[in-house]
Length: 217
Image (cartoon, rainbow, N blue to C red; front, side):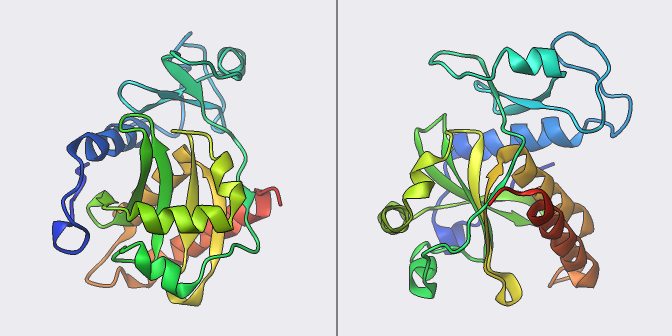
């Protein structure tokens, strides 16, 4: 699965962060839905199981509950970080159309995460080619973060602001990073033609409906 870079609209992307998303999507997307095992102890795991983030490669790692519990509390220098299971719905979010436009994103669906590799906020948007990094206007992001202090609580590397403003929507979540990658893979697999087709947007709506049903306020 390749990561495209749209330099014509967003400026040149960082090779390190594009590679980071590629590694995560590759590791997450190749695992079968059934018969999965913990990558640490090899015990079988249920379809819904914890994930860890491998810091050096940004790879998603499957874990059983006992192994995941070893990484519940973060500390500097850890090689693996537990990815949160729960999403949080942000309603309302102070984000005007002008502030969104200042982020210079080519589409209205994106997620924002503090990259552990480059130690700053980066933005990615799903595309038919996979997750694409967009050159983030850090001044514009800083303005949004100041207006929404909750965004400063994002856990670096493993939590993201997931924003959907497509087709008139205004849906915002603090989401586990593996769910952001899952959405990216869903769009890549179902995209048809120039606009994506009805099926991909039905899948996107189902994804957000499920997330909203299980999200904490």
